[in-house]
Length: 360
Image (cartoon, rainbow, N blue to C red; front, side, top):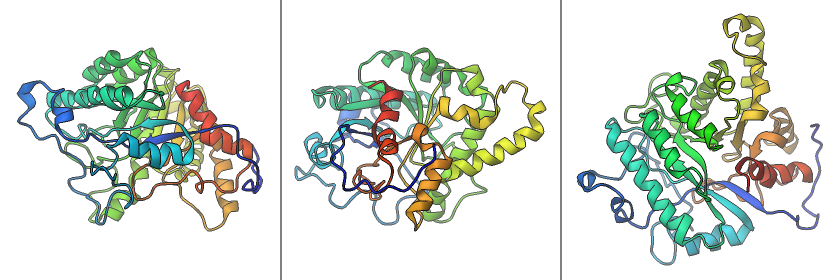
């Protein structure tokens, strides 16, 4: 699609809503999770996250603390007021972070992810979800692909779980056949496999860049390196030939890197295609059928015309889905993320691509 600059800010309000594909929610206290664990695990700490690369300033929006005094993103009434009602969100795709993928004790990691799924189903997908606006992700611990597949089986068919969720942090790129049980379960139950940026270099996970960064800004900037590694691996190793109905969602890793990566990959494929005879198409040709990417954090060139060109290059009309990353400090407001784009493209990014992917 050829994109031309168009100012739609003066047009009437659109007739469609917004599907936010990256909304983070949290438990109100650790007991909400612990009660879903076998008592043999109760002595183990449940907290986890960026042990090496903690935020040097703050993680969340300064206005995201609920008046109720509950932790950020744990009060459903306040989240609805600040996000759902404020912006007319039709559905919020919830990404709860169990931070279980870096753990070396695989049995506990699996139990922890499962407990977070139980909690999400009981609260945000259950008691807080009378209108069905919240849709959830099945958290897995990819260290044990067989156990991950069983967890997917456990929740498959639930009306509000719409995808499987893992981290970008891993010990092997996702094209490795060790992950096939996960992708087989995703394909069997028509659930997209989503990976959220983070936990690279944490615990047992490898750092995608050369060595370990010394500053948070280095680690955060290089997130896209891990995504490129996973995507190239999946394309070249033939994941989408082995699983022709599998869809993959790349969350919170930026978007501007994708066109150049695919140009380079297609060029090399033309030279070395005899090395990968299982591929039936150019690597870039698998993207529209199998890959979706979320918009936040949106890299913004100084000139809007350059952003529009980038969206054109990456086929945003078919693969890009809006995300706000609520409640984090770099939250992208739906009102300002894409201020000057054609209405057809805006509708695809804000609504149609996610509606089709998640069958909403």
